[in-house]
Amino acid sequence: MGKIPEVLFVCVHNAGRSQMAAALLQHYALGRIAVRSAGSAPAEKVNPAAAEALAELGLDITAEIPTKLSHADVEASDVVITMGCGDTCPVFPGKRYLDWPLDDPAGRGVDAVRPIRDDIDRRVRALLAELLDRRSHVEPLA
Image (tube, rainbow, N blue to C red; front, side, top):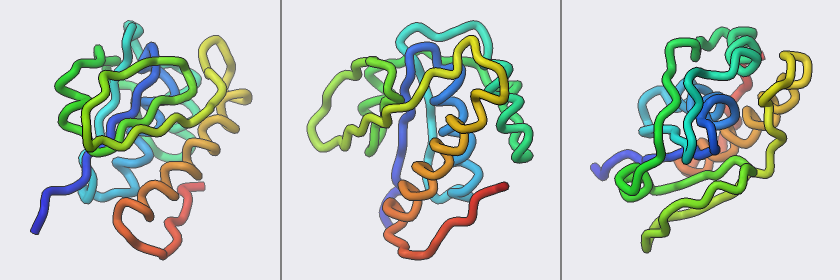
């Protein structure tokens, strides 16, 4: 049996989009995918509106700590996903790089973050189905 796929979500502050994506993928993957997130200039804490938007789905990211992006993170990952934030990642052969053009939740309230969360949720479920080579539908949390 081969190793499980590893996914890295990257955004500048690792406080909103990448944290939401990581939490959603971890939830849906049930241990079948290794998930990490990082940023080039990590914030001190997770975006409160992003945390509130995920809490509405029963997921808690308040204890997560934004992490500095490293070459090792990228090298260990099979799929590297930037979150429409212009972050650049080291490029290693054999890695799959995607960019999801998403609005930045920074400075926005939960009402404005919900559509971003929902967009990330749709993308994460599609990625999960693809990575697990399953054609079955992954139901959203809400």
